[in-house]
Length: 146
Length: 163
Image 1 (cartoon, rainbow over the protein chains, first blue to last red):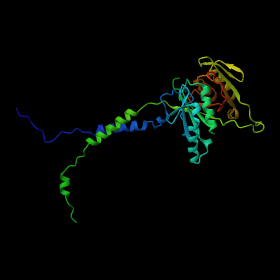
Image 2: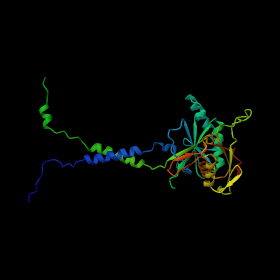
Image 3: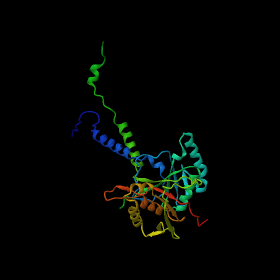
Image 4: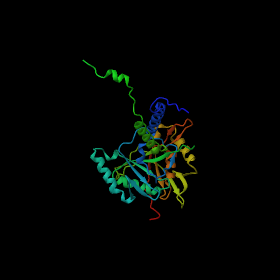
């Protein structure tokens, strides 16, 4: 039996639609990727609130403090007890002052675990106040389930 | 001037090598798929709390003393009682409607009114956020946030019962 050969070389399918779709997918994921994840911490389960809407404008000179359920503070990857946060905050304050910005304009974002003790949150605020921080933002998760 | 090779280029069809591009594109795709994580939106409650300045003469006469919201906790840190200026409320919606009746229509009141939250040390923090939610606004039927009292501060913390 004769086997017929059609032309020479390899038959190529049309790749254009596939590449189109793939680029669309890439664009989709690029748009949705969240670069703020460094601000988040897996240990922290935020309390929920119906009023928690994302801010219209990003906060000025934010400092994010995480407060775990056990009452320990995480600042920039370092976990310390609340009483030990002072020196870290002083470092933050100095770096703000080096940028010629007033410390009172800086906002301390407090991401406390929902089961953390309120007194500890207040202790943490006191520690910040000792370092001349005045503006605080208590972060909550948007409550969509109602 | 002589233009070289024109005849030969026309006769050859140049094909782009697709394989390396598709390789890279798929790598990118995999990267974005792997890093993709649906995060719920987060929002802030702003609180301005400068360190209490030592007495600077008489307080401003126009200033209304802050309303005091007391949140008490039971042994497990759960909410045991809500009281605003001495009156008890049994739920957050009750407190919310009280605040609405107090400041809801009055824009100047909304700006001047201030609430001081005094919570028990062991109270779980989500209750405080629920209290701040009840004080600072409500969501109307259209899904819009209506703001109520925005000036919120904390009373000095109590003592830690566990030392």
